[in-house]
Image (cartoon, rainbow over all chains, first blue to last red; front, side, top):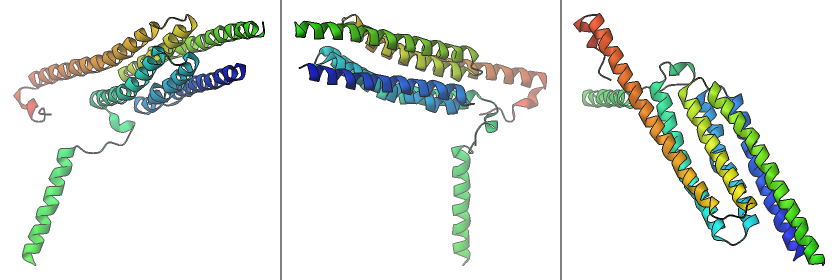
Length: 131
Length: 123
């Protein structure tokens, strides 16, 4: 029994430390990268991987409880919530930044692309009619 | 006697490790706060606040095992939901405020330059 307890402690502590390490990497990324859309990558890592590592470690500590179930629920909820909030933040940044071209490559809007495609197709049809 | 000693060893190890983890998380929380104060754009601040929310969630979960109170994990779950809702509401509100401001600016510009200023104001 003693050995099992020690094994449980070591595995849980290792997972908890992995979670802390990932939070540290996230923090380094958020200070190292230069623009918000780049920083968002680092921030999303901690939201999913960091908290799932540390909560799995805490689950191993707590054993078979309802506490474990609630922690699993938190992890699953964050898997769904984090991409949605990241998407909304990226949309906010892309809509409010006046000079986005300085920081990243901006493609033309979808309407412009569709118009160009239509013109191309019409030109091709005309050429086929002529030939 | 041996069993009692083992239990006392674990009783010493677990709280010490939990308190160390809590201290490390608190230091990282302050670093996040620095990012939120420094961030040049508003999306920067919201990202930092989101990160702080995640770290506080881990802190509450660790605290619930340290104090042996299971109901603290419920608070952690509710905290996750509230921080998700806060990000959504703040980004939507700021988008609305920005659009209103831009419309007012365009109206002022068109009034300043006469009636001809609304040729490309339809986006």
